[in-house]
Length: 469
Ligand code: HEM
Image (cartoon, rainbow, N blue to C red):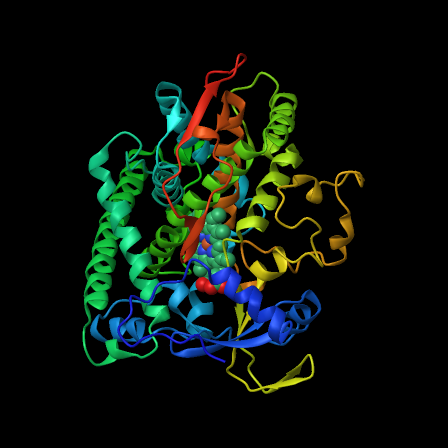
C-alpha cells in the first residue's frame, strides 16, 4: 500500500495524518506497510509485536537517510552529524558522548545551569503576564538551555531579538529535512534543488557558528588554566566541553559535530513539548491545581528548585508523561532488522524500515481507556483506580517512549527532562496558566515534531504566594 504523492507537491505531512493511520490500522490490522518518501515503512501498532521487534539483535543500528543528506556529505567535506550516521561510524561518536550526556550524574550536572535560564525566563514572564506564540517563545528558552548546556554560554536570546536569526536557521534546517524525508525520489543526488540549497546554506552557517563558540570556549578554559582559576571554576560549574576534551576520546571537530546535533534536536523538540504540557494544564485546571499543590509541598518556600526537588515531583513527571502520550513527539522508533526475520507471522526481509508506532498505540483505547483525556494519574504509583483503569500497565515501557528506546534513543534526554521540568514547575509555581477566549482544543500539525497548527497564546495570572524566581 502506498500514500501516493503527486510528482511536484510540497511534501508536507498532512494534518489528517493520524486519522489516515488509524483508518489503516482499522482496515489492515496492527502491522501494515506504508510508503513514506522513497522508502516503505512497516508500522507496528501493538505492544506485543513492538516487544518482538525491540528484542531482535541490532549490532549496527543502521538508518536510511534521504538522498539530500547523502548529497550534502558528498559535496561538503565535514564530519557527519550523529543523527545522520549508521553502524560503526555512529557508535564511534555516540558511545564516548554517552559517558558525558547519559551517565546517571548528567542530570544533576546540567540542572543548576538550566535553572539559571529558567529563572530569567520566569522574570520575563512576570513582566509580560502572557506568552504570545508559545512555541516560539519557549523555543528561545530551549535555545538558551542548549547554549548553557553545550558551551556554558548565554546566547542572550531571551532578551535580544537579534538572536532570533539562529532560531529561524534551526527551523529551516528542520523544515528542509522533513521535505527531504518525504520526497519520493532522490533528485538531490543529481541536482541541487531549492530545498537542498536552503539546507546546505543554513547547516553550514550553523557549523560556523558552533565552531566559533567552540574556539571561544577552548580559549576561555585555557585562560582560566593559565591564571590558575580553572579548578575553582570547575568546582562551581559543570563544563561539558572541558569534560569531553579532557577524557581525550573525541577530537574537538567531532565534539562540534555532536553539539550541532544537540542544537538541531533540542530547540523545536523542547519548544513544542513544553508548550503542549502547559496547554494540557491550562485545559485541565483541576490537574493544574494538583500540580501546584505538589510544587508548593516539595519546593516549600524555595525559589531554587534543584535536582532533589525535581526528583520528588512525581505528579509533575506524570503530567509531562501524559502530555507526551497525547501528542507523541516521536511518531515511531525506527528499527532495521539486520537479517530476515519473522514477526507476528510475517516474513520481513533484512533492511526493512520498521516503525514502532507509539502515536497509534498511545491513542488506542485497548491500551489507554479514555485515550483522548489528559489523566496524569495514569502514571502515578498510588492505586487510584477510581480515576482510571490502570490495565494499560500490562504494557510498561513499550508504548509511550517520547525519547525513543534503546541505544539509539535521545542523546539529550538528561538535558531535555530537567529543562522541561524546571520550566513547567516554575511557571506553575508562579502563575495560573489559561488559554484566552475559552479555547478548548489545540489542533496540531507536524514539523518533524508535532506542533500547534496555529500560534498558541497563554494568559498568566500571578499566584498570591508567588516567590521571586
Ligand atoms: C522534549 C524534547 C525531546 C524529545 C521528545 C526528543 C526525542 C528524541 C528521540 C525520540 C530521538 C531518537 C530519534 C531516532 O530514533 O532517530 C532523539 C534523538 C536525539 N536527541 Fe532528542 N529529544 C528531545 C530533546 C533533545 C535535547 C534537549 C537534546 C540535546 C540537548 C536532544 C538530542 C538528541 C540527539 C543528539 C539525538 C540523536 C541520537 C542518535 O542518533 O544517536 N534531544 N530525540
